[in-house]
Structure formats: C-alpha cells, structure tokens
Image 1 (cartoon, rainbow, N blue to C red):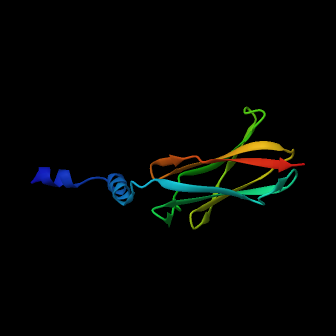
Image 2: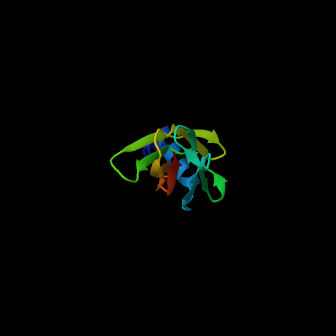
Image 3: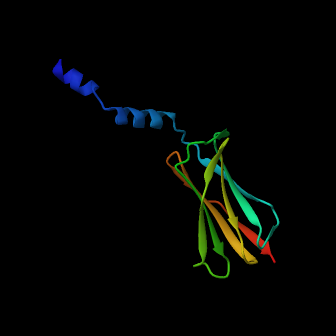
Length: 126
C-alpha cells in the first residue's frame, strides 16, 4: 500500500508539465510579420507586429517574441526589439529608423515548444 501512495504522489510541477504537454498541438505555429506604416521614411516610428496562431487559433502564451532588424549593407549592425503581447495572438514592438536604407526584419517567436523566424525586407526612404 505504501508503494501505491508513493507512486501517485507526484509534485505539482510534474502535473503542470504533463497538462501542458497534453494540451499542446503538434501543428506548427504560424507567424505573420508586418509593420505600420507600410511605407517607412527615416525619422518615423515603425510599429512591428507578429500575429501568432496555431490550428487557426491565436497564441497568447508565447515565451518570447523579438524583432531583429539588420542593415542589409552591414549585417553586424542590428537592433533587437522585444515584442509585447497586444492580445488575440498579436505581439508588437516599436522602433524609429534614423537613416534611410535597406533592412532585413526577422521576428523570432518561441511558443509551445516551437520556434519560428520569418523574415521580410524593409526599405526606409529618406
């Protein structure tokens, strides 16, 4: 009888991990990267947005969302912007480009044991 009780007395953390694993889907997360305004000029604040879904449902429990902005001409120059939850699976971050140029924007999203990092090119006009 003592062995049965010991086997059933798991801790709360183990139960939470098993519950999370049971509720996680094997379907990939999908990330839609965008920004506003769509046409960016130097000196203007840009709002980056990553909409995260899984199985068509919003993902509001992402562990990390970060926007990485790299200069096309100099890949060593980069900025990392933390994405904050705006609800409905949307995560946003803001940045102001001081100079015109071409940039690569990558959203790094870690959610539900998965990582997705879609990229898009952004041209900043003078």
